[in-house]
Length: 272
Length: 258
Image 1 (tube, each protein chain N blue to C red):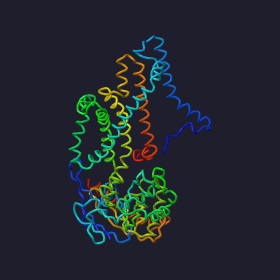
Image 2: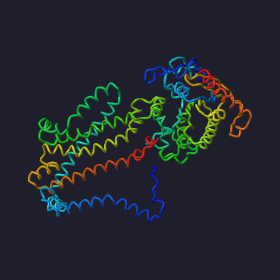
Image 3: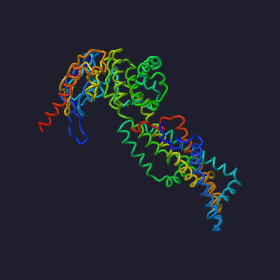
């Protein structure tokens, strides 16, 4: 890993450590400043709760219902996990299929593009009719939202293999299967992870859209039901939890890549 | 050992025009001979190597290795590319063993051999590192080990030291000579450097560009083992001068014709 030269490393260890700490704390400080400004505006201009609740009000109302909120959050997480998992399981073989031959690509791509071009929000009510008022339509919406970027990025990765790698495979008379397993798939790993990062973010959106249309549980449902009763602070609480869930899931993908595929994070091939 | 007869290679460029990369190339390489191919960019040197490796088929002419016609990729050649092209996800050891894995042979019994090869090129102790942790020269050394792992009688090298700095390049040239001294192979080595070619080769083949043709073929009778000290010898200088002359006389002739 070749990092940029760090000017702070030149100084004594204590000063460098302090500088790093200061740099790491900047994002937190700016978020804290935003919350303070928000709180002061709401109080200063006497904005009513149902229009824009103050952070303190959001906190106290959400905390008061913490067990219920946690229940809803778990329901949403479950939808995300199932929909995202399904997308991963379906998109990897699909990407291999699409890249296997030009004929297959020509057949499958139009269908993929058509599916992707349909707005998922428009599809959600239809899915509820087709699949029933249960968990399935929400999982399917989540799946539909995030499988396309996965297929596209993995397919791009499988096709990104440098010509010399393929020549090496051919000169060893490697079978197509071995070439896929030993060379194409590892080559696609950095692409897979950039796809996963997009997909995990979209999967949160997908789950909430699904819950808006038909659900009796979940943060999306909580937002709808609480705004219906002008309990805006609770809706804001749910929104903030969704944001945190999105950040946490994204960071989890980043952490998995760092832990299991460190070479992918700083890939030599893209620096030439 | 390797015979090329009347090789012509025509590529179709993107706009549909036919480009002759090679035209009427005859070449023969004896068993355990070290042949260097020198020529300007675009003279089809790399194409020639790929033809011998069986990675592409010639438009015209025939290639024989050991009296048998080449009609597809062969396992009895090792290839070293200009870039190391190691797999960034695999350790140095796994990279060296990769050809065996790609061939579907068991790699485990060759672990010792791989370590010996790495030791030979000065990479002992680096076997568990990832390629990204090595310098360019070390990566190319590992790539040479990879080409040698299945002990192929033929080694094809496509400007293997072209991407290295001048000092590393000289070091690697000497190392390649000592490897070749130890385990004799038939080597076809493509290079831009006249000095490198004369120092390494038994025979230097000079090619012209567009279309690629063999202009001349010069035997190098310098005694082995070779070293950079020989560069000062009149014999060395005279071979280098004739190689240079046959490259540049062609160019001058082409310029005059225009």
